[in-house]
Image (cartoon, rainbow, N blue to C red; front, side, top):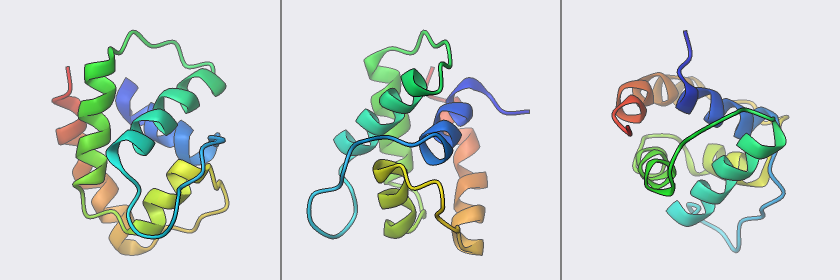
Length: 102
């Protein structure tokens, strides 16, 4: 069962965000935080998450083993991104860290 934070990440990846990453490399925590918050609004997911919780989630995602490409897809709202096995494993490992962002 997906918790609210996991649903926000899924919405950011699938629903799309209009934020674009600037330059190359790993997106910043701020860019990830904005993408998650934007996706929650776009997807119509009711949320009572605070900005501190969004920041906690974004930091967990940024510091995870998700590839730079996966993070760019999240921030850019690319719903066609095909995650690698490593990205899938990293996403599974994120659940506990994200759940701690209460």
